[in-house]
Image (cartoon, rainbow over all chains, first blue to last red):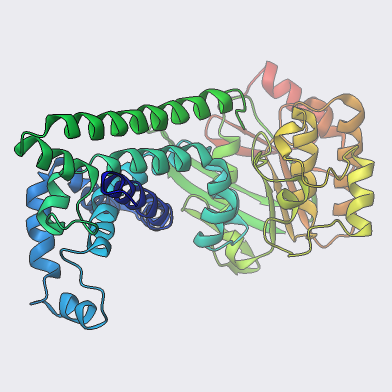
Length: 224
Length: 218
């Protein structure tokens, strides 16, 4: 593959894998928040939303501290051939953590806006919380789920600070489009920077267009 | 007979004390809007704490955990993203086709088995009838229905009342529904209860209920 496209496909791959992973992980957190009472629910929400307020470099630093080869987690994964720093899989893990609020917030909003009767019916019928969530609530929260997945995808495409901290700048592995644009600007290779930026702008416009098109198309199908 | 006692405060802060009993068969709870019918049902079922129940011996609360209970919330509570049969079974069975008895019951209430179509396509009346079937499908010991006939046309309203009477005739179960239709007081053998001004009273007839509404005694 020509060198020009490698960072772009790395960015797309990272965004796709992270958002697909977050569909699963986000549901776990949404379930946990929805069925947690009092202070516990509040603490989980704070945890999930930390990436919204923490500077990416702070998150990157703590990620390095937590998953470097000097820690037991980093060491184990390193021995298995999947180091968590300066690697693509490390970027995926970091993007999943960083993308949590973008997935969980629309999803939990969607679920919390459902009539209380949906949950109460499940409680009265002695259904387990997992059943209530999966079979009674989630089928009615597809807008939140789709919105979360799309926002996560779009957000991951543009990540820079966090990726630079934990991934470095390794060609073909962690040098995503945002970092490559930065490299070209530093090197004063503006023509290349323009081309890359233009392609990323086009992808971003297409992504946003698909998001709004989907919402417009599904606006009339109000389930309740 | 199940005796109930509830001492609590309503959302407005007003203290209430509701005492009475349910008989086997049909029990009808009348009350004007805002009198606390749904409030009482939620406590009886166990969605809110505070009620004490006895049928000779104390009944463990919440009621939905200790006894078999079928419940229809106000408006039906049909999940529109699920199909008809998914709404009825709600996890009871992995076989998502109606058995013969269920099919007959659905047909008597004018409901077709629409296969994979979502329930949001049903009319308001169809959703109510579906909710009633869902509550009855396991022939529970306690069948608690919040305004089950509100919004039904006269024909299906009558069919549903007959179904309830049939179900309660087996003399094994307690059927309690709330209403503000005086005609429901004429259901044969019904135990009539009136909730108003923070108390529940036993009534003897539709006339007494009507008199109470127009000439309430302190």
